[in-house]
Length: 444
Image 1: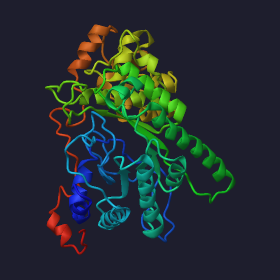
Image 2: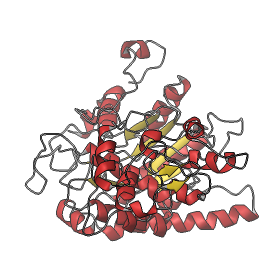
Image 3: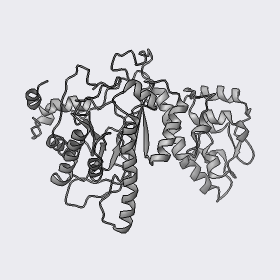
């Protein structure tokens, strides 16, 4: 498509193309950054997070989620925007992104911006455009709401640092779990180039914390931290390998979140896995998210959940149940005496209910009815708990027996794990676009 045609493309047409092109990037939830507006601009961020609307599988839908451009110099085999694909290309200008963000914010369609991009001309050129966009949003438009932006691997460190002082969160996509997978499907990218900006963000964040400790009004660098995304199922890594990579990222780079994206076949290529009749591996993605939660909040380690002999999760049971069934020697747990960390390992007990149990038992002995009121999921926990030395029902502490009963208890799975279409929710699902145009702002 010629530059002349691109210049004449209506803004809403660009929005349709570049919001659709962003739908496979799942690493876009906001986080609890506490940065209040100062009253001179528009918007603010509260610690509870600005994203109060999520899709059924956990994807955030309250941010304006777009690519700056779907032009790309790379030819990653799994990407719909790969350079060899014959797709309609479009690019925003910094002014257009700012206009869209401000107008949608004023209308209460969104509460923040998620901005990613293909690589236009070069990493430096693309990162400079992204920086110019955020600078204009903050200092020309006085936007003080939430911004999540992608750091471009290979871009000049100075540009990434400058952008980090304008964003709330930055992310660098790992793309694939291993360097081998990257060489196979994205040979133009390197693991070294991807990890370099991650390290930069980590180090600058630590320096910034020290600056703020001395100078309270010092500008804040990426206050909501950084995240990354891995595509699951495009390459043959096991869950054990993936979970070990995630654990290493949390420990080495202080990441806030690792996102897992089930591989969606959008290209035909002999290097890619065959199309699955059952669709993308969404249930596997769901189990990895549950395991990731165990790493971050339940004090588990990857080597406890899986090993080389058992490298993949049983998709029919959640990872904590799988662990408990393999370690029945630790059960049953007496709820009135077990410490907090032991309670966390009981299926059906979350970190909130574990905290409630520890506080409530100071006032007296707890019974199963009390546990239910505290949010314990007794249909799973009853096989692993005693109250006052007694189990809720007469049950056998045997792996096969408990497994059969747990499988008969239907787990509530995210809606859409069967027959999910991967159509990203749009800003206009519940309204007529004509009404938007007639509201008084010309997007053309």
